[in-house]
Image (tube, rainbow, N blue to C red; front, side, top):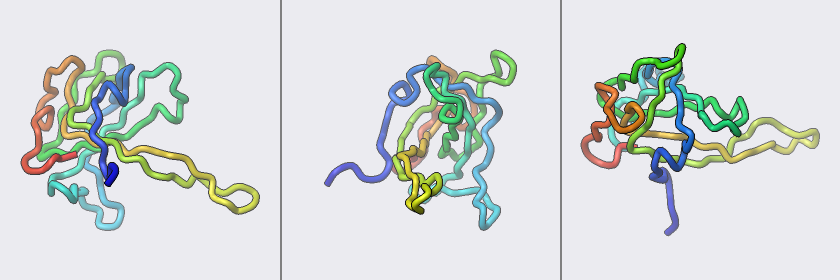
Length: 145
């Protein structure tokens, strides 16, 4: 059987130019229950970190990315280095491709594109220093991403 589900990747493969977080990690809230999402594979809480891809060739809309972090405690991000921008790296990353419908053409057919969902098990400052609680510590049990 081919690859199914989450595909393990290295941070540098996904973001060769790095990323910058613009705020702190926040709980990912379930729209229906208004409670924090729990990862179905690990049972751990899901946090979200909004980042901007530093790739100069990235289109503006494509450079804003949400990375879900599966961790027992809320990840603490490094201090900002310029304005609100915090350089970060994610550990234990996985990517899941999916088909996104962005509208319909004049004939009523869906307009689609391949999109990606990013998950990680930790966040740290670039170069490998842990960013604090929920940082690079691996999750207990199965692969948490």
